[in-house]
Image (cartoon, rainbow, N blue to C red; front, side, top):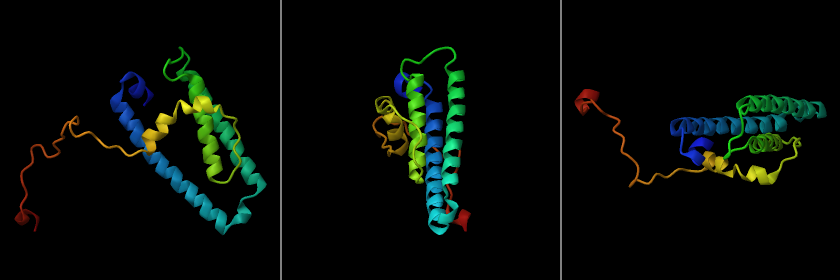
Amino acid sequence: MGFNKHKNMLKGISNVVEATSKEEQIHGDFGIDLIKILKNEHPEWFTAEYFTSVQTMCQKAFEAECGLLDWIFEEGELDFLPKNVIIEFIKNRFNNSLESIGIEKIFDVDETLVSETDWFDEEITGTKHGDFFVKRSVNYSKRTQSITSDDLF
């Protein structure tokens, strides 16, 4: 999505990433709701050991994400989306996820760097309204014939 936003490249891939991110956000929100329900029904499950375990798993997942970033950026930085900005974005996402389920955040985040990725959340959570003067019409029914009520019933 960053390539599309900053360099007007990879629009198709950007659309797929956006759609996938929106879908994953829905899954994440469902998981948050489920954890809150379980916490209300079985507070005894949510011990200090549970909280520590979740924080430890997040730390390990973050380290794995950083390993991927090292690989992605092994040939250099992108001027429009530096590695350190992505790292802060990831730390912020982990912190937000932890806080949403009642667990203390574990990462210190540089808010100035995170603010450089505000556009991503706006793209994912915002409603899109296309400009019908600019949009190309899509013909979904090429090569189809008209269907009458006699065909249906």
